[in-house]
Image (cartoon, rainbow, N blue to C red; front, side, top):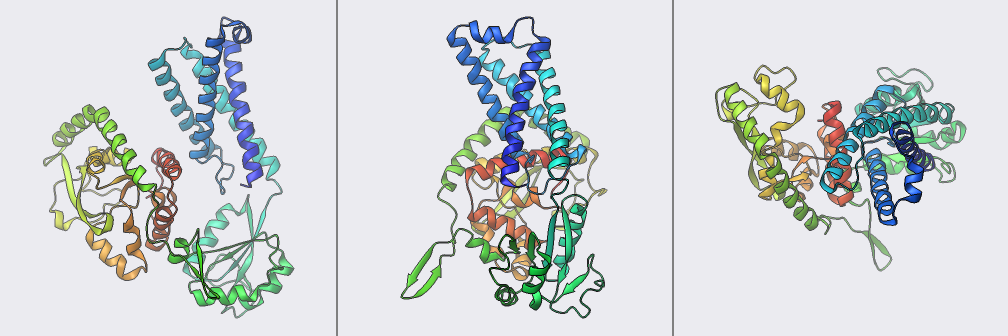
Length: 457
């Protein structure tokens, strides 16, 4: 979504929030809300406005974190309704807990319910109008340069969005034998060779050019063939390699007349703050969920024979081994013969299916976080066998171990079960080399969305 449109939609969302609050008080309150604001003592009015402003900011934050302004978000009633329900439930919980702890003034529960209902309906109506009116003719013309197995997945994803957001002009490929003809096993036609990219871009005037080639040499040759004036006004994206992600925010030095770009091999200094925040959050959650974990431990042992806690060796930060803890979700089996569980796996217990679906099986990992072996957010913890295999087949795979493994991560919330190890590595490295506390917060919110919508890896 374009920045201007995203900001406009955010402002409209906040105005709908304010309108829903006023309308709920208008319909459900026995007193005049406007009169109350103007005639109440200054302290009470100030306190009310502070609470209101805080909840308004929280609402905007939740909308952003749960992806209501995502770049590739299309109109989908089910998708928007699901996200708005999640946001409404989180907001209801935050308001209820805040008022229970502080007890500033009585707000009828019916007011909150009416407000949330009006707000959700208003947001759905606004988004329907926003997407249908503003994006009706806003179709991105896309040209893809390069053709390989990854390109096929890219084209299929673009095709999924083509009915509303994109139109594929075609593919440029070095080995195209019949320009203009249908590609053999690809979704769209090959319209020329990449050496003709400059001419074809001038003729077709795409809004978006996606460069999907596997070798650095090929990438350089294609970019050299395109005049910078040709792509003026066109967004040009390339599929980055490992080290291109590592220099995403480059620092330059010059030795004589030779420029060098710094390759970051260490994580941000803010990571020390992250460890401190992880410890206090994990301790708090452990104390709060201790009764639930005790009940689940008893339930797991009663559901099937075997220990309640499953421990397995994983590879942690700097490739140091540690044992990860989970509630056991499978029938007892020799640990050395364990393989990755799949959907409908008969080895998973009935209770285990529920624990996996809700991710409650990962609650014991709070102990790993307290001990400094894991974090809430980070690359997925792998077993040693997987690490050895990926380090042999995926260049740069060892770079992901500069960060603590996490309960969730960028690769988990943006990828799916079909995302390959190279793409997951890119997400992991982007997280490691562009770390900021705000990134953790957005990933946590997207994790909530992923769990509730049963997506991700």
